[in-house]
Length: 234
Image 1 (cartoon, helix red, strand yellow):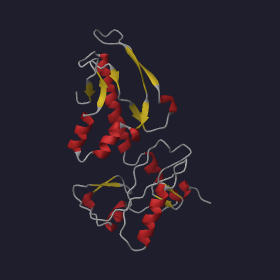
Image 2 (cartoon, rainbow, N blue to C red; image 1 turned 180 degrees about the vertical axis):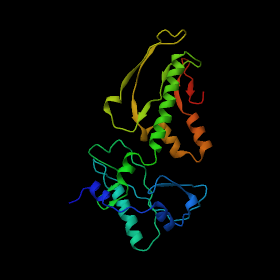
Image 3 (cartoon, one colour; image 1 turned 120 degrees about the horizontal axis):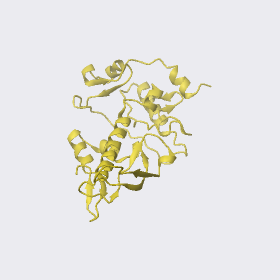
Image 4 (cartoon, rainbow, N blue to C red; image 1 turned 135 degrees about the vertical axis):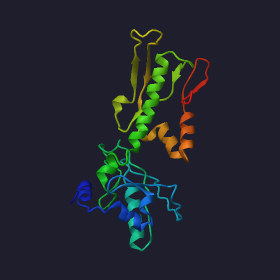
């Protein structure tokens, strides 16, 4: 019996432009990422379709089943002659090397290129990670240089797209060294998984770039001695 990865690697992939034509998408409506992946420019398309939502009530401990059922349903509708497009959330890298494995389906009901989708895809999760941790670095620099407003307690955490238990609870040490006017401090912090970060939540809820900037600016990163909120835009 072939494993999931063996089945995926034995698939003959179709050019993403060929897939797009089946959905009546023109080439200028795509933003290609190589030959087999692409983003759709939503400003140029106005899809009209029926939406079927597939969710889970009692998933297994490993979480498998939801994606596989969704893919099987889409394949069945396509086999019945319906024009169908399956929408799945991007897998987090976190579970890939754990008991669950990947999150792109399984067996002959999976999406390909499976390895690319599970590990890097179009780089969005990595971009969210970088944005999140840039804000963390700015917060620490703000405290280190003793700038106003003075942040007493930091709420915002770092993130990474990996399940690393050793980093869930850490102690940060920021020595002032010989820098005049700078502050030395220690504090407890930790890493969240990127998919559960507040920046990711902002990205998912945003309607456009301006809305995304507003939402990220509203993130509460900490509080002052007076109990006032300090936001990312401060």
